[in-house]
Image (tube, rainbow over the protein chains, first blue to last red):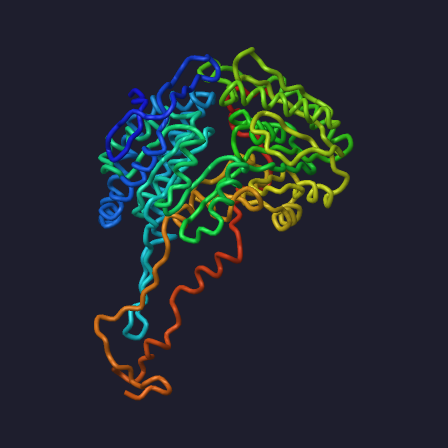
Length: 489
Length: 48
């Protein structure tokens, strides 16, 4: 399986007509992709192709759309390894983890079928001779903007439910992961995807702007940064005719209380903060630890485990816990963030370092910022901030002191602590004694505050892929037993 | 039309409840365990 390095518009693979861009492997520096981006005109053609395909696609019986999606799943199965390799090379994540991402894409099909029926299926009841029926209808043409950290799984989590509902799609992947999108679309075509039902436009911000401002899209499903999500939210303000679903970042807290098993606590912190090198939106960014000796000891043990954490290139043996960031520039940005936190008074407990010049490989960092004035930003990499707290109310207040609200976790404590935490913490994914990066695929996924716009995805993705139509129907028109007041025929 | 039938214009809309409830709450998904415990095997690259 090889990348076409082209766009897919109306069933045709075409060269882009705008400027050339490339994607380099962030660890080896090898060029993975070089091709022309889509021009604004080509973006318009992609939207028009989706619009033309829409009536026929929406009209098909659900069973036919389901069959196509299931054939796509079979194609993913057949191409697991090339897809995983592409994901590992583009994102810098370890191959073992890239394989789990392909697994999540495959699993998404069954989850989406269940969600379609449970969230948006059809139901009817008899209301004294009138049928009260609830059905759901697709919006039409949906633009899907993919992120770079899960270039297969996250856009797939929008596209599978969108297609099942009967929508057509124009997909703009991150310009940092064009190859995985290319291979995914080949799987769709191999499965028999009709022309125009998914169109692929490659490129960076100019392509995104052309697509998001196209008057003929019915909605936009975006996974990415809070900055870009905020721009889109403002751009879509006042456009009542379009649905916008935003999955953005977080500055996620992980609170530690009364830990008995220190090894298990350290492991849960590593899994929360440094899985995927911190490139998951659910990663813990702020570790909230009690003041005093037990907290000191835990941080000491965490620092030791961080020093021992194996970080190496994605295909290394033995396998690394995490590998590269998405680009050397992203790694430089993280180092800059660490320097910035230091100048604001942060005390480095474990210094994050570049492991090999010119690559995106970074060792994990830990910095105590208790009492420092620092910006409420998501640093998308292996950098964990520490806050020490005096009492439980302080811990909760610190945890909630963010404009975001994606994930949160509590490690330790008893049932009453957990009940209180669950009640007071403001986030959409709230875990106890489990890593913040563990989210169940069959639950809704999303947050509050600046983490999104109240359009949770995963199990609830079906909701934003369709709108409800309520009907009162009767085969025949008949006079009621009595006329309404004031009517005389 | 039998006399016990409600006139169609007087029937309540069937799905009003759905949207109103959705707008009044947000979902919280949790993975929870009473105790913190080590897994049977460590993830790749971790040495405690």
